[in-house]
Length: 119
Figure 1 (cartoon, rainbow, N blue to C red):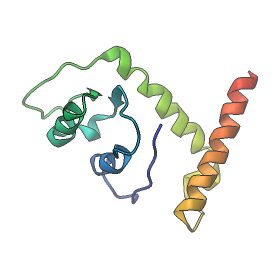
Figure 2 (cartoon, helix red, strand yellow; figure 1 turned 180 degrees about the vertical axis):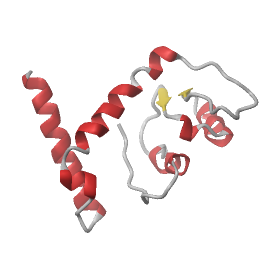
Figure 3 (cartoon, helix red, strand yellow; figure 1 turned 90 degrees about the horizontal axis):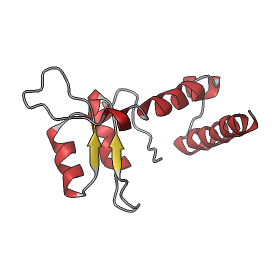
Figure 4 (cartoon, rainbow, N blue to C red; figure 1 turned 120 degrees about the vertical axis):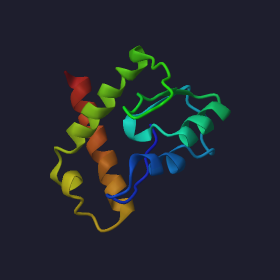
């Protein structure tokens, strides 16, 4: 999983570029919500041979099939964010620096993971 901090008012589609930087190996699939349904994003993913699992917006003229089996995995990511937001420090972003915020997200993620392993 890759993460990058953007402004709170930034749209999902604008955050795809920094997350999909080329310094890391390409993933096999790109799971995203309808907010990332843009032609430019799909073209870049096709160039890098990454399967786009992005549902179509309602106002789309061209419809493309979405692999529903892979799209179900996105639910796990959404539940992970929900569990992270249960930590008040993450939900309200009390940290002054991005590095401190990402560090606490790492700590919270490890605690959630350890709790998952113990059950």
